[in-house]
Length: 102
Image (cartoon, helix red, strand yellow):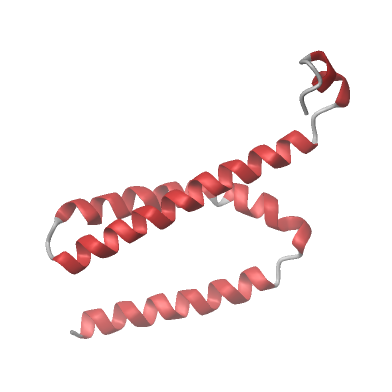
């Protein structure tokens, strides 16, 4: 039981520290920060797949499946934001050469 309490304490502490760090980032840096966090989310996705696949207890399986869903949303969203950011830096001439697509 003490291991569970310690894990909840670490999770809560990480949530507060993460919120404080992210809230101090200027809005112009949010997009590059999110695109850089895709690698970390990929690691989270692999870890959550391992936990969900263990099937040690129904609670761990449920938490693992939830972690897989949230990590997948984060990875896909990060790639979409990165793609959108990169499209902003394409030259207009290159877009016109491909049928006017931006």
